[in-house]
Image (tube, rainbow, N blue to C red):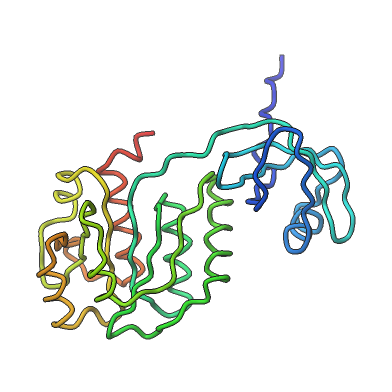
Length: 249
């Protein structure tokens, strides 16, 4: 007897929408989302797609109508509630656009809860197109089946971030000059955390001293090799997630 196929099919398109979803809701998708569903995924009336709203979770929806610029669907069943993600922030210094795109995408896939871009003295960029960055983060969340989007903040200068740093959150600082091994530090401390990654040229001495003087900052090392900023961001997030048990789920 053949196995019962999974429902909804694993290949069903996934999209985040702004509307809060509930059973029976009628949703109209247009613009880029309609183009993606109609021209790229070739959905037809009666097909099933998956929608997320970053509030209630993940839902199946049935395609009712397909036109050139609009896809009409009806929400049918809740598949999963909104997930609870680990309480880890990533605070990456701004990089060149393509490298920072990688940081946005991969940290979202790894399950980060907030991305706080940082401006330091040696940053090659001091601005971020927040609309474009939000699109990249959303697409990454859709691709990896997240039901919760990470918070994405406007860039902030390092000194300002440290002045307003929450007292209950440890800030791990990837220090090129030395610190305790990240694996040991991540395993030893439970609770809210954040990881700060510097720019291509690293932190200058005044910034480094400012970090070391802050009561919440813990300097860490990321192994015996010198890592590019985007590699350091991904490696540190992955190690923290593993140390805190996220990969055991």
